[in-house]
Amino acid sequence: MLTDGRIVAVKKSKVVDEGQLSEFINEVVILSQINHRDVVKILGCCLETEVPLLVYEFIPNGTLYQYIQGQIEEFQLTWQMRLRIASEISGALSYLHSAASFPIYHRDIKSTNILLDEKYRAKVAGFRTSRSIVIGQTHLTTVIHGTFGYLDPEYFRSSQFTEKSDVYSFGVVLVELLTGEKHISLVTSSAKEKEYRSLAAYFITSMEEDRLLDIVDALVLKEGSEIEIRVVANLARRCLNLNGRNRPTMREVTAELEALQMAEKSSNAQQNYEGVEFVEHKSIEQWGAVSSSTRTGWSAWDRDGDDPTSSLLELPQLSVKTW
Image 1 (cartoon, rainbow, N blue to C red):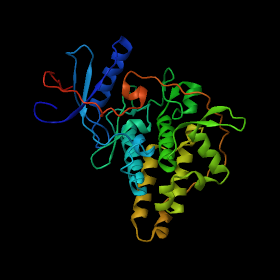
Image 2: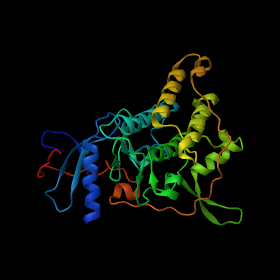
Image 3: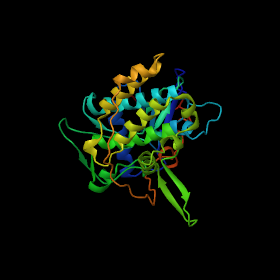
Image 4: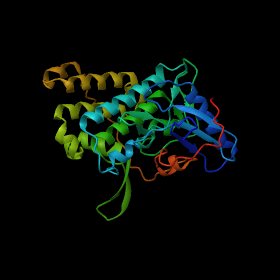
């Protein structure tokens, strides 16, 4: 709690070295350029302690991951809420890509980096590896960074991160909202050997084999119509195309999700779906099995998938300096 009574969340680096300090500074710089209701707000930073601290607005209801995986049993996300949350995430990414002062690539979109506020509205967080780019620049050539299961395969092959790489990661989150499954699962094969299964690959295969409704979350099946579910699934499939050029932009994704929400609110949904584009792509490239998962990070939040708002620090002695 600050001296004026505001409750805040504090993000704290476990250790300090030059590389991690640069990520800390990068997060401050990136967030200082962003003003969007669905992006977590940074209130300041503190450099007067042994370990640097970032001070954020407090987002009270945990991460999207916790609700998708049923870790918060007393509250379930309805189908309408899932659609709204998906639209809020896509709207924030569309803003980052095309409406911020400089285009920004998030580079780490995943359900543990989506926080939910007191009204269960999405707040995109986790900007430590994000990058702003020069207007007109089409990609970043970087050392591979990301979380397997969300990582764009095209970026993994080329080391070139584009705005469509964020689209791919969003597609995985959309599939999580549809199915309630984890981005990477440990499964047992017929030979009783354990291996890691990519949710994206499993989802694409299920659609190709016309088994979509077999993998959709039970609550989604109960509350959503089949046509709604298939529209969202088809959008996710397009986001997960292995060829980045064939993926939609986040602006296009947002427009389709908003159109779907409007149609869903109508008393006669069937008539309203005429305005929602349903595009089938027959040529989906073969997916490979994911055999391992590698994650990098400097905080307990990113490394362990913990809620960054779960542990607050008392700040009466700290001088919080606005960036």
